[in-house]
Amino acid sequence: MDNIIIRKAKLKDLDMLVGLWNTFMKLHNDIVIKNNNKIRVHVLMKKNADDMFYKWTKSNIRSKDALVLIAEYDGVPIGYSMAYIKNNVRIYKIDKTGYLSDMYIKKKYQGKGISSMLKDKTFAWMRKNNIAYASVQVYDDNLHAYNVYKNWGFFEFITEMRKKL
Image (cartoon, rainbow, N blue to C red; front, side, top):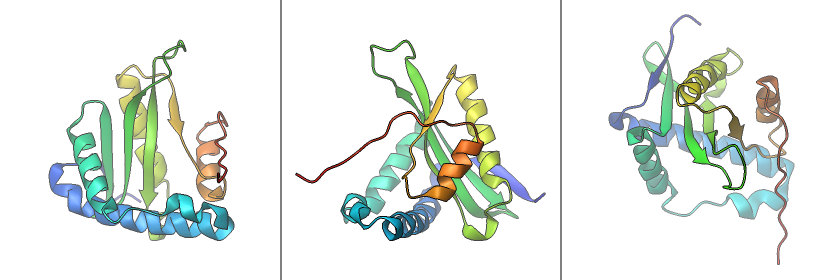
């Protein structure tokens, strides 16, 4: 796809990013809830989730320690990614990691290497900021994302488990 452009997000992109995020979250939740109904209560969002995401994304666009990218095809937004530099637990030698918090490509454009383009720009930004390791979280039941991240060289590190009390 020669007409793909990856660019840094601007403040004027915030409303569009909220729209992409809403689509991303609906599809994500459909996948993980369909495969594991126990997750339902853990992915229910607050009524003001859009506003919270808007503010979070705005702070990341403005931050030197974060990167929000938009993928466009013929000038139309088709996906985005968000990453930031995260402090590690202080007792460990690795002080900071790059955290890939969001990665979404519209279904019609998936499988065309666009997420890899976003990943490559994100990893280059992390390296430029002296970050040696990237991390990502993925739900166990999101096999597509899990396999993408494995293909990119990520490995299992921590498993979070939950129990209702």
